Structures are given as structure tokens and as C-alpha cells.
Image: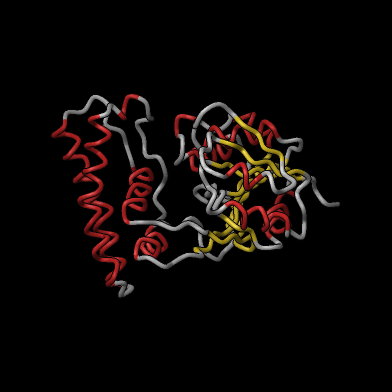
Amino acid sequence: MQRKVSLYIPCYNVEQYLAPVIEGVMGLRQAPDEVMIIDDGCRDRTLEIAARYPVRIIRHEGNKGLAAARNTGIRSACNDLVASLDADCVPEPDWLEKLVAPFDDPSVALAGGKLREGVLVSAADRWRQAHMPQDWGNERLLNPRFVFGNNVIVRKSVVEEVGWYKEEFRTNGEDSDISRRIRAKGYSTVYEPAARVTHLRQDTVRSVMATLYRWYWTGTDGMKLRSVLGRSFRLHFGTNIYEFVKTDLQKKNFDLLGLDLLTLLYMPYFDIRAFLRGFGATEPKLVCAEKKE
């Protein structure tokens, strides 16, 4: 028997991506029972585009971030199985049927699929593919370290049981955090690479560096500027840039070495900006997303 699934797409100013994503959803071999567009304070043509399709548009006040949009989508869902797609991820026709299959096991509470980078035009796009993968490869995994949030299904009842997505994470790290809390409750998680989506994101050097910073950011609240700079140097030079350069040399990605070196400029820059505006006072003091080993 085909399981009933609700699906939501969290949206914040995604007019350039949304139409092909919704059309991909409309072309799924197993159709979701409902499709929701979660408006997280869009100011562009996102909602105008969404209104062309048979979807339900759900708004919450202001721009609260991805974690809050996830909670709004799950709370609004009519079914216990709730799928989600990032607004720049186009599903393949068999995506939903592949991703829902693990839920035949009642212990499974969360499953995610494989993301393929579809836009590799710029050096920033290629750098993102090389150093910021959002999947675990080609092998099916039971209980991976965490399930990437770009294309997933969760049990609504379990998300409620573990306390919902933590909205203080805003746009990064909410997926790894809830994966850990679901596992801690004794449920299983699954990575299913046969469930595939294509990522439409296009990056600039600044945008990919800003995303990298959000992945690894650890907070600056209460720190002196010298400590902020020292932490930035130890974290980014002592860990990240060494791995970036090593990987690109091994794989002969010589065109990416310049971006590897730019992380030494951008990461302290973002740290200083966060320090000056008191960023640490409003964000959690922890790593926002785990590094893939």
C-alpha cells in the first residue's frame, strides 16, 4: 500500500530556482498528497511563481530562518510522513518512492537522499562540489553520522517527540542536530543514494565563502578581538585550509587552489564582522554543521 506523504519546500527569495523544483515535484511517479510552500519572508517573486501551481502557500511572520520554516512545514502537514526539498533541489521522478521505502521499518524516523551538483559553471561552484558535499556517496547507510537536510522525509510524530528543529540554528546545522536527537531517542536514520536530487545553486566567491563560514562558525560572544582572530586562524588555517589544499593537490584541481587560499582572508573577515555586530549574542556557541570526513 502506498504511504501518504506531505511535502513542503521552505522558501526565502528563491525566484530563480523554484519553478523547476515544483515542476519536478509535479512529475514524481509517486505524488505527495499535498505540496506546501513555506514563505519565510520572501520579498521577490517567489510567491507569484508558486501561485501558478497547485500548492498550498503557508506564511509565518518575518524571516525566521530555515529551521523555523521546517517547523512550520511539519506542523502544517496533514500526514505523519513529511518530506521536504530545498528550494534549489529538483527531484528525479522516482525520488519519493525511493525515499519513502525505508519507512516500512517502524524504527526508521528520518531518511535522506543523494544530492548531485547540477551547476558547475564557476570556480565557486566547482569549489563547493569539491569541499562542501551534501551527501554521503553512493552506498546506502543505516544511521549515518547525520542526514543532510536538502532532501529528506521525517516522521512528524518523532520530530514533535524530540522537540522540533532548534530555531536558533536558523540556516545551518539544524539537520545534523535533529539527526543526533532522533538517534538518541532510539530511532534509526537512513541515507538512501537511490533517491536523487539535482542541486541548482549558483555561487559567487563571496556567497560560497559565506556558506562555508556558516558551516563551521563557533561563535564570538564575550571574546576579545585578539582571541577571535586567534580562534579564526587555528580553526581555518589549522584545520580547513590544510585539508582543502591537500585534497585539491591530490585531485589535481589546481584551478581551485586560489579559492583555498582565499579562505584565509574571508574567514577572519566574517569573524570580525560577527564580533563587531555582537553576532555571538544571538547565535548558539557551537559548530553549525559537521564536517564530512
